Image (cartoon, rainbow, N blue to C red; front, side, top):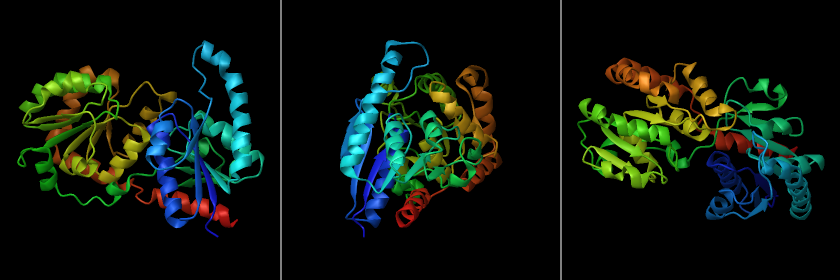
Length: 363
């Protein structure tokens, strides 16, 4: 009992890797003697991030299909066969009790092989619009943990469990008070703070918008904490001042969220789940450059519940100041968004997902 073996597979983006690591950490807490192996795609960020989190990882030679005819697409059948063979060897050697897929190309071959050998498999779908890999695997797995309502349109109803997405423990236990947070950033406690989040690499269009609107924000009496991303820090750090703080990456997210009065963010699944727990009024600017435009769909799911505001990149020039001013000037609207987004929070998501995995172990 307790010396279970788990394979976790998912990657390509932080949105797939982070939940897999969070699930592994919770399993490890419950089963300290368990063995873990991650399987990712060679050359993708999981090959670096997972070992940093303290887990072993093996890479498959797999990429997604490109949307247009390219040489990479012609290679796809060979990569798929190679990955299925290697996945077969990994499963034979490691002998997992349960396999968990969090989306991304690498999880496809691995869960395909494992489910074919009657090893129980669990999928975790972070977005409101299901990813290609998870849709292909839906009939082969035992359980599908989702974060949004209405996912039965993609998956068999009897397999779907709404758990929410894993978020960092430090956010769930967030107790930082605003004064501490304001002092941490060297800001003025008497003035409100706008927080801008563009993801760890950064978001070009969001950064351009903030640069254009710095004078407007100043006129409104706002201070800005601006995470512009590591690709853009050299371009924007010149704007650092008493009231504008520019970062490539924010390490203390507890302070970051505690300082904020209003937030502008991309709408990746992980960010949306975190922001529900944080419960501050948020304007989402979804990235249009992601598979199946899932960021727009994630943001729309919140807009429908009056829990956030969404502006598409194409609307920023014409609409931004009008929409922002209306929110900024209405304490009532801010409070309403705050209450509604908090109602959607799932702070126990990781535990709930692991409860589902445990049921399969005892099955």
